[in-house]
View (cartoon, helix red, strand yellow):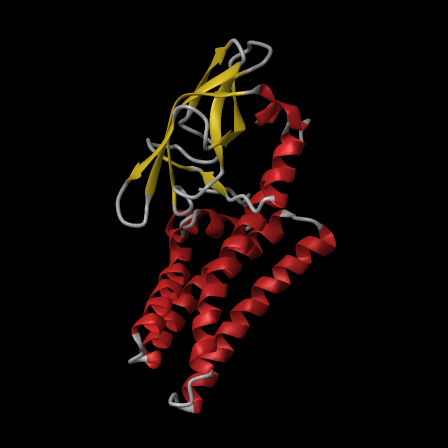
Length: 267
């Protein structure tokens, strides 16, 4: 079933949302607040998660959940693949640029659940790879929106050359840093140092976007209404990187410890 689902996502351009911004103290990717109970045809999941985007257009939600172990010995973490047309899935507003997704006794077949115990000791490797790629994908997505803004500035002859070159240098430098980490993953696999580098680059790009995006919007100036709406949309998309987990201030202690040979932990 998982193979059919993945093929359907690729072949039909389906949208997948990741719901790990959960409610409750200590909740997160590695300590999910969603819970599951055993049902006759699989597990029934209940809980709340929040996505930064796609909540109202997603076709599939991937969420962390605490489930009973198959051997009955306590509980374990798992990833649930939840088609959004499932009974019990609802979406509501939860503040600016946030949407709350509620699962109310949603039935999930066993084939759409990936348990930590089924990974045969590969959990750390998979988490390292997943976190590293997530940082790169989010960085690339938001940087791409910023690059589209900068491209419009470069094509505007009213903007002084010095300003155009300044924005180009900063944007291309940020993109080159992200591409370098991506090549490291392709060439040697995701190690802890690669994950650390992906975080360094993400936070560096985040700072660059704080400078580039408002300056690009200002330089584009008095556009017609259609172009202005497009610029506003791109600016909103580009500014979302700071909202992606893990937040820099939460990672400060972990990165400081890692720099003096401690373990890298995701806060």
